[in-house]
Length: 338
Image 1: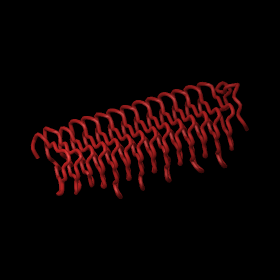
Image 2: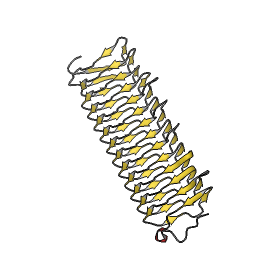
Image 3: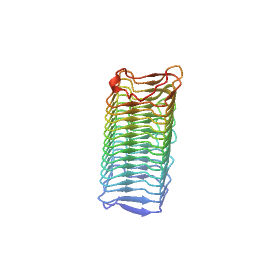
Image 4: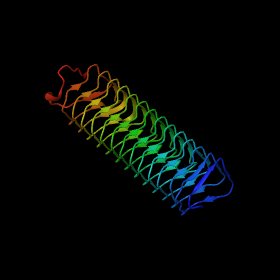
């Protein structure tokens, strides 16, 4: 490969393109190109990697070092795309791409260091999309994506460090979405998302540290939503959400620390909603909520510390509701059905 890189548009690459361990001062720009065999670029070093609009049968770029952006917008792949352990100096974008990992991951960026943001808007994938353990210098956005996780997670961001916000608005997923143990530098937003969790949680943010708010407004889930043991720097809002946890938790924030309020107005749930042992810095509101706990608790806030008022006016609960006993924490105007 020429030391100044490659600049091609609309190529048909019949044989194997193997740039593993290659070094170039310039960009590798192969937009709108068709690859007949997997593209290999492990441990390579480029200025930029641009594959916008290209058709791939897999890409192995594990350990690659890219000084600028990696762009796969509108790309298609019928094999796994891997950037595991990569170092990327700019943004990583797969917006409007279609990735099918067959029996493998669709997109793997585990333990990658990405100094810019990760953009997966409108991505369609079959196979796990993973940024587990990655360090992302900007935001992670999967707005409008459609992710099918197969036997794994649809989106795996466990133990990731995301220095900006995480945006999952209008995401549709089959398979768990996990931010367990992650650190998010701004908000986590899943407004209007539709999540099917399979055998596990639909959305798992257990032990996550979220410096801003967590917005689940109008979220629909089949499978529980968990913020157990998490730290949320502002509010938790699930207004108008519809959460079906089956016989388990619809929503659990057990032992969580929420610096602001928790707002569950018009929430409809099947399964227990639990804030047991949590610490809430402002109001806890379940106005107009409809909670069905089955044979267990519909709502459980035992041993919780609620520093603001508690508002539960016109709460409709199909099972027991347990609130903290301290009167100083209770809004005198609230009515709680027995």
